[in-house]
Image (cartoon, rainbow, N blue to C red; front, side):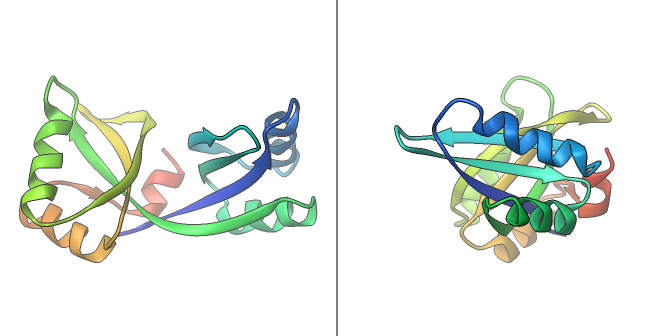
Length: 143
């Protein structure tokens, strides 16, 4: 029930983000979700794409440093305090959220949030035990 995410380390300079997206576009790779965190010297671009292995290989061939990480996609009620409720459940289950970012699609009347947990298996167990929908990777890659 985990989703593959790629993380690309890029210099914090003009044109590098455009280069990553150009490389992916040339390989017919569709970006489904993204998060960009930066410092003064470099950034970490986290992506959910429809062809993870091809994206990783293509970017490495173009000289980018790329890692693959497992994350979890969760349907969150798209209403005030919807996310708060999920976070309270996770906190009650002793699960630590390392980071999270929103997904670009909606699923029914819910938003989709990408989570990185310190213990993904424990997080999934807590979520499912509380009737929270965790999405399969294949569904996320093709939303």
